[in-house]
Length: 243
Image (cartoon, rainbow, N blue to C red; front, side, top):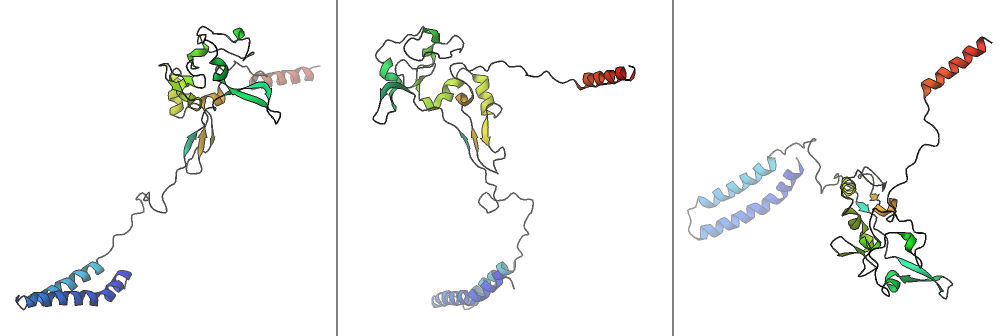
C-alpha cells in the first residue's frame, strides 16, 4: 500500500459520512430514494480511482526546476566603479598633520575655463607633470566646465566620476562593444559563474584617462630559432672533430 492509499483509508470514513449527510438532506427534500446511495457510491469510486492511479515515472533528461534544490546557481558579475570625486591635497595640514584636501571646484570656480588648453605643459599652478596625450581633445572635452566635480558628456550633460565608463564609451565605441561582449578588459574571479562571482575592471583600471594608449614594447630577448641553433651546434661539433 502506497502513502496515498493509506491516507485515503484514513479519510474515507470522513468522506462517506459527509456524503451520507448530504444524501439525507436530499432525501429530506423528497428526492427519489435511489439517489443518495448512488451519490455515496460515485464518491467512493472516484476517490478509489484517484488513489490507485499510477504515477508517471520521472524523466531523467528533464531540466531541473529553477526552484528546486538541484537548480544551478549562477553568481553575479559586477563591474568595478570608477574613481570617487577627486580632490587636491593642499600644503595646509589638519590637526593630525595630514594635508587638507579640497575639491576641484574650489579652485576652478574662481577662474574662467580655458577650452583651448590641449597640453599639460601649459599648466603652471596645479597638475604639473601630468602626462597628457589623448588625441586632439582639450581638458574640457571630458571635464565639466560648469561643475568641475563631475565629467562631461558630448551633449554637455554631467557624469559622476564613478560612471566614467559612460564617458569613455561615447568615443571608444568598438572597444566598448567588445567590452560588453566580454572580449575586452580584464577581470578577477571565475569564468564559470557556477563556481563563483566575477568582477570586471573599469576602463581606467587599465588605461590612464589622460594618456590611454599603451606604449609599444618589444621583447627583451630575440625569439629563439630552434632549427638555426641545432645547425650551429652540429657545425661546431663537425669543426671540433676535424681539428
